[in-house]
Image (cartoon, rainbow, N blue to C red; front, side, top):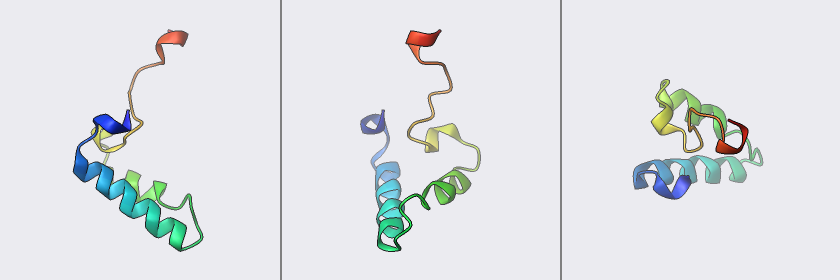
Length: 56
């Protein structure tokens, strides 16, 4: 999943999560990531847009 993402996306997620942890708000990075994606699921590392094969 995440290892298949472009390095720039990995860097952005790392930056956002590090800032959130430093601010003692470890989950606060999700919202900025979703906002920055502007609806593009390719910018959300865990967005597969299909059900897991075990539940299809």
